[in-house]
Length: 355
Image 1 (cartoon, rainbow, N blue to C red):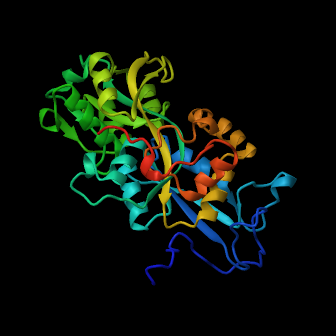
Image 2 (cartoon, rainbow, N blue to C red):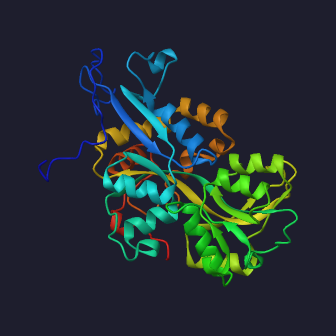
């Protein structure tokens, strides 16, 4: 492939009925007899990324033969079939997007920034500087879940305990390490287990773990299921330690997991990080413009509100909040057209969070 030719691995083309498709704005369209497939890498099936990714995939899809949007049908991208793919999470997703093995993915804001800038956990790696943002979605809460009978009241109490810190390649593992360090600990000070949230919740219910970290939008399915089976508590991440985290890592913000969002579980203060939809600079501008427009269509609002409790927090007015990597030109064009970006800055001038 010529180096100047845009990569087209994002699109699988298969024979189909003649479509004659094009966007109303005359921008991106699939040629006749072609169907486009677009994947969204998410996370484990017990987390929040997977159901949210499924809702987004449904919203931006408009398969061949679909009823027109104005007739009450799909208001997604004409001819496009999008699908949510379960993965290990943020780190795996940004790396797959950068390698071109997946078209887009969901990622924590911190992981996306570090990957793009070659800092933080990527300080010894080549920056993934083709990474681009489509939208900020919702805040993810750092859950520290422990057995009610564990005696663990603080992060500091995890010393010597059996704790699930997330899989290698997950955003949970990244943030668990940061939080442990804030309390003077590391993975060497705990009996770390590297498992998915679902298996981690099973082990905790069986008494084989004392606690688990999980970064996800609340309510997270794995924690909901665990709360129904076992008496658990949420450990707060607050006070001076949380203040120091937020000061050093500006992608963190204060948050709270409310009481009874998990059945019978008291609320807790915590820190949050934005969940973002990212893609590659190699994906065509007109396609990303169409995806962004479909994401924020009125019909998508209904899907998000009905489909998942976290969907209600995916709001257009927050679409560029906390985005510390460049917006994809297609997304930037949409936000500029609707007035969300009144004066589009160059990527280099965008404020970057502190490491």
